[in-house]
Length: 246
Length: 281
Image 1 (cartoon, chains in turn cyan, brown):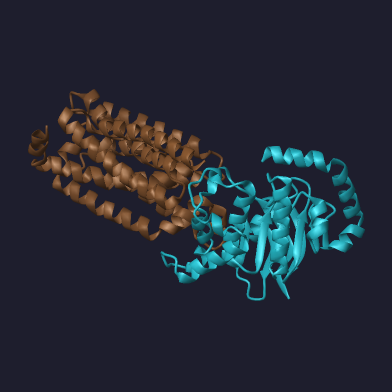
Image 2 (cartoon, each protein chain N blue to C red):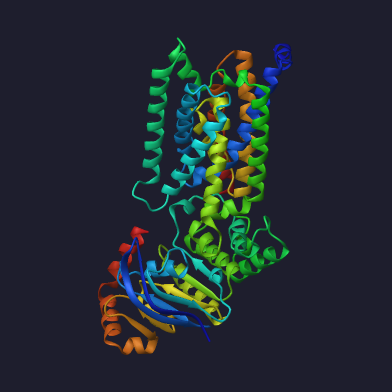
C-alpha cells in the first residue's frame, strides 16, 4: 500500500528549479533516507511535500486515506526556539492543534494523546520543565512527541541529529527506528550515509545522477558505492563542520 | 499624600486616565510576548510612527474623529511589515526602519507646512511623548478604548493556543494544516489597534517600551508560555497604575513615568530571575 507517490516532481523557489524529475513512492512502514550534496534540493523537496511551498511541476499523490495535514514534521531548530519560554507540555500539546479545526481549546482526547506520546518518547517526567533548559537530545524528543500528536502515519525528519553529541545521536536514531517498527513511515534527510545504510529500507539520492530504490540496490549501484566511499574518506571532517555550523 | 490622591481620584478625567491606562497596558502586554519572541520588538516603534504620520494628516484635514484615518493606515502598515518578515527582498528589520523613519519625516513635514498653531515644537512633543493627551480624553474616546480592548482580549483568549503554535514554530503549524497567513493578518490587525490605542497614553515614541518591557521582565522569571503571558499582563497593569499615580502626585509626564516604572520592574525581574535560577541549580 503506497502512502505517498511522487511523479516527475520539480522543486525550487521563485521559479528557479533546484531539482527536477524526482520520482519515488513511500509505502506503509518504509524508512526512506534522502541523501544528496548540500544544495541538491533535499530541504526544498521536504518543504514541497509538506505544502510549505508549491511544486513547480509534477505531482504529489497522497493515497490510502492520508491527508495533507497528517504528515508529521520534525523541522530543524530555529533561533527563535532556542530561548523560547514554553513548557514541554505546552509544546507537545500544540501538535494536536491541526485536529481541532475551529475549536479554540484542547479537549480530553488531545490531552490523552499528548500524554501517550510523551510516554512513548520517554519525556513524561520533563512535562513541566521549560524547553529552553533541556539538552539538545531532550529538545528533539519533545519535538518528535509533538509531531506524533499530529500524525500516526508519516514522519518527515530534517537532519534530526544536527548538533547532538554522539550518545544522543545514537539514542535518536534508535528512537526513530522504534517508531518505524511500530508502523510509522519515516522520511529522513541525512548527511550521514552510514546511518542511511544501517537503518533505512529505501534510499533517495538527489543530484545528477539521481537514485531511488531499496537500500540493497543503492549499495550495489555505482552512485552508492562512490558516495559511501567518499563520505568515509571526508565524512568526519564534514560532520564537524556541520556541527559547528549548527 | 493619600488625601491629595483621593481628591484627584474624584476628578472624572483622572478616572478616565486610569481606566484607559490600565486597559492599554493590558492589551499591549498580551501581544508583547509574541512580538519579542518573533524578533519584532521594534514593530511597535515603527507602527507608532506611522500612526503619528496619519495623525498629522488627520489634523490637517481637520477630521473630527481622527481614529477613522489612523486605524486603517496603521493596520495596513502592520500587514505589510509582518509579511516582509518572510522571504522578501527587504528584510523585517530594514522594512520597519524604512516605514518608521519615513512616516516620522512626513508627519513632521506636514505639521510644519500646514500647522496653524504657534507652538509647533510643543505640539510635536506632545504627540510623540503623549504628555497630556491621556488627561484630556473625551468620554467618546474612553468608550472606544474600552470597546477595542474587550475585542483584543477576547480575540487573544480565543486564539491563545494558535498564537502560541504560530509563534513557536510557523513551519510546523503550516505543515499540520493551520492557516498561518490568516493568523499573521489577525496578529497584524490586533497590534495596529493596540498601538493606536496606546498612542493616547504614552505617545508614539514610548509605545515600544509598553510592548517590550513587561514581556521581557516576565521571560526572566518564568519558563512556560502561560505563566509568561499572565505575569507580563499583571506586571504591565500594575506598572501602568503605579506610573499614573506617581505622575499625578509628582506632576511628572504620564508616559515617561510609566515607562520608568517598567524599567525598574525589569531590573527587579532580572534579579529575581537570577535568584530563582540559582535556587534551582
